[in-house]
Image (cartoon, rainbow, N blue to C red; front, side):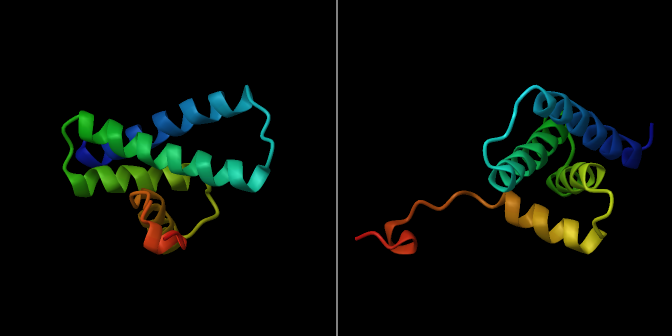
Length: 100
C-alpha cells in the first residue's frame, strides 16, 4: 500500500467505526451531536494515524479524509478549515469565557 493509501485507509476505517457506533445511539440534539461526533471522528482518525507512525501532517490529512468520507459533498478547502477548527484544543480560560 502506498502512503496515500494508508491515509485513506485510516480515514475510512475510523469513519466506518464511528458510523456503526452512531447507529446504536439516538441523538438528543442533532446539531450539537453532529459537531461532537465530527470532532471525535477527526480526532480518532488523527490519533490512529499517529499511532501507526505517520507524521503530524499526514495524520492531519487522515483526519481531513475521515471528514470527507463522512461528508462527501464538502469541498476539500472547507473540510480542511473545519478539521483545523475541530482539532483545536478546548480553551477553558475564564478571560475567554467571560468569567472573572
